[in-house]
Length: 429
Ligand code: HAM
Image (cartoon, rainbow, N blue to C red; front, side):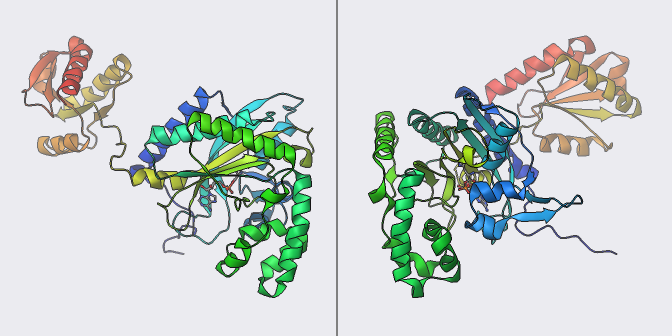
């Protein structure tokens, strides 16, 4: 059996040139979330299929069509997580973390949905997921949105706009559901197969159908905002007042219903026009009913998830990009004894200057070849270890990006001289 094994469609390798952007984003997210008091939680990528069915809803695209489910050797039906909220809530219940307590949590990692792959839409994709559990809002709703707005500012991303809506309480949605059933039943002949199936089960899901033929029909459907209960109206008004006070711009989109069933009241989405058909970069909302639905005690909560691939693409479109860190010092070796000494010298330098990046010339090569590699490493300084110099207890230092020439340095003074030379190179640049 020979031949190449193909990668799985819709699942990407992140190569080193791109992982710089990922690290830049992840670093900014970590720092920001820490600043807002969020703690990291790590949960498995596989859960019982039942968890997602119950949390996300039987009539959603995700559960109906997109889950990677399988039966394991023990006969259990398991699913690769299509999103993180269900698993995080499950973990809180399983570990007894609720009991009236409040938690600000975040996690990061791969999610899996068997969608049709295209630019910005993948079968394995990654999310930063943020959840505030035990907070009734609307203050926390506003703070979460402010956090996302701050992240865009820190990253220099400007091509994003905020959309907001309120889905009200479960009771308000029941009244709305009846209106939708009446409306769509009156246009039964225009519905596609999916929508006909959803009509009795969950007509709200027809509203986020991706079928372009249904666009007009959906645009003319009754609005949930007309059925909103007074408490949800007040909650939404308070959120809007807070956002106005913080100077965060948004538009209210009464058609924003989100593709997962667990939402109530506030929902929001940051959208962009820079990614073609895939416009949602970061989306979420309140899910006050989910925790009881999964067997925990009634606890209000809100969260969002950001699609990392999509944000990385926005970063890639910026005029300046973060660069991979260059080496500080490249160690060039001249002669067999020098090669032996090189390992010892560089390891002791790594002890003395742990924050500096050293690259030892590996695999031999003549002087010219070694200096070519030194150039490619973008190091500021070359350290030349030669046999003759070794006998005299010195090494040569050569700045690579400055005009100043080569100089000799006694072994014992190396850490201090390297540090000084690197600082001088930094200042000159
Ligand atoms: P979601 O809207 O399904 O919500 O996904 C959140 C984000 O993940 C989207 O805005 C998008 O950026 C990204 N995303 C979704 N599907 C794909 C895909 N196939 N390829 C690339 N990126 C994708 C949730 O997952 C909720 N759990 C969010 C949440 C947390 N709500 C409350 N807490």
